[in-house]
Length: 346
Ligand code: TLP
Image 1 (cartoon, rainbow, N blue to C red):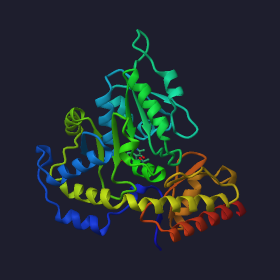
Image 2: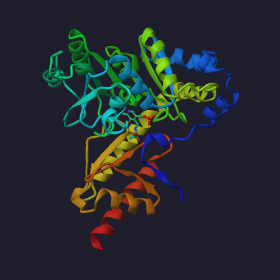
Image 3: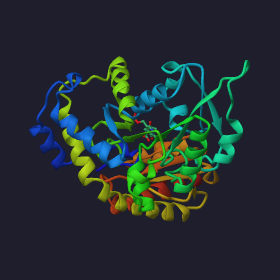
Image 4: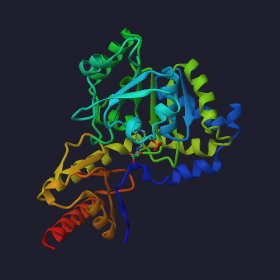
């Protein structure tokens, strides 16, 4: 039985083209800046984001960690939404590596507004930690792949810059935002000081992310990357797959988005299940109305060859990607309906 893995788009396997490129990659020692394939990837990533320079990092977490370090001083506050990846899933690296605390804003969709941010900005004073940075997540993972309207990004960035603050965009899935809005990536992240995006999620590379921003910051970021253990030597073998991902994969995202909508429509027909509106490739759905706890549902689905993660005590997340087809999604819907009915009638 084929396992239908909807736990995340991180599970995508490299395509035959990526594997071929990996095998043929020209490599050198990237710590000396001598890996031609990494250098090419960094140039293309700078171009696609419209930033002066880019840095190839092993993970999105390392990209965010370096960005926060570059844009803050020890003892400052970082404003983000209360379910941000930097807050909930990065093992307190904001505190651990940058010595900052987070000021979280509760939202109903993961998207901050300048009105909310403005109220929480703190000046230097003898009491409070001054605000240094605003981190925005686009698309927003745990709220179901929600997308920032471009006006909101400008309002936040312009407002922050007027006050001498920086903005980092956690754009792990910025290509999904580009697909959803029809805007080029470079326009979406233009007003942010730095942007991180992942090649290892919907774009399908086996590993690798990019941090992009001003050249002087990326030069400094290279040192932080080494300090964090991210000097990866002949890593052109990975960069080669990332170049293919950058070139080939964005055009596949429309199908992922359509599959996510199909999943959500089907889930909405199952009594007791309430999916959030879908904008990209992530479906977050509330199962509390079924009486089946999310973790139990996840176990039941696994027995039926379908993998989805419970993300809290009410919600389950399903993420579409190029390794799941429309038929797989239909089968996954059948498995959810069956698991719920079985639990209810037992
Ligand atoms: N997200 C993963 C898990 O860590 C939750 C997933 O399965 O979705 N920013 C955002 C918005 C992310 O969703 C992720 C990974 C990261 C950063 C970190 O990327 P990696 O896993 O490469 O460190």
